[in-house]
Image 1 (cartoon, chains in turn yellow, brown):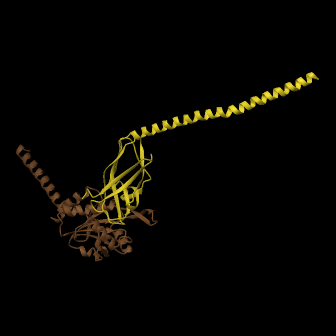
Image 2: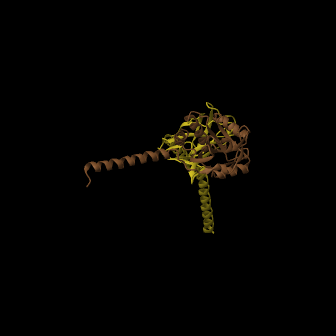
Length: 182
Length: 205
């Protein structure tokens, strides 16, 4: 009887100890996880800082310039074209993917070329530019087509464009209206 | 037996013959241009930028005519062709006996009013006129001078208005006073004005 009672009591004591251990674990575990979360979070912050550092390095290497820009005179609602030299002084390749302007109803990147005696003009989805490369937007080749400008474009006027690159970089450029060929 | 003096005389005669042949050939070739198209086979009733009727080629008989082919919705190549007409006229010294024509191959959109505005943009001299006409007549005219066009692409502006562009021949031609096309050049190339000026100067002499 005593033995049975002892055994029963010892079983209950063990059960209580188990319960106590489980309780302690359940209390400590969230604290441990919390500590781990804090560690993970600081790690994420550290990684994010690295990405920002990489970005700033990209900024140093990305260096595309727009020079010698001009646009052909025209009347409102007619057509015109803009020309310039795109030069990549940086060390990363990129692509001009879009040009926008508030000065006309639409602006598109186009290429003219001669094919079997016929002058062909095609819209270009992008114009890639490699490091050290120069791309000439000039009459009879690449050009920015200005579709139906809002106002007359007279010699001496200027219009603004935003050049969008595949990297997400933007170049804002104000272009003089003129005609160096005449 | 040939003596040295006789040989010298024969050699001199041959040399003289060759030199004379060369001179005669050169002098006859200067103005010898093959007729490419005789425009007198058909008469085309066209209209200029001021809505004045033009009968082609009759109205231009007795004059040299420099013809370029353009459409005003062309942002890149046709302005070069128009510029080349202007440069030729300027380099020739604005001759009164040479007419300059920019003929539109897009008559549906290039009405006289539109051509008038186009002429204003380029601030051209009175001797440069832009022609258009009924679409069927303009089409026949372009066929007669072998100017080909094809709709290249259609695009919509942000306001939803459709605009189309044309692939087209790139030509400037010279028609002589008899109404014959005698020279044909690439229209938009930068080197063209000096070539045409050189040819016209030799023709007008």
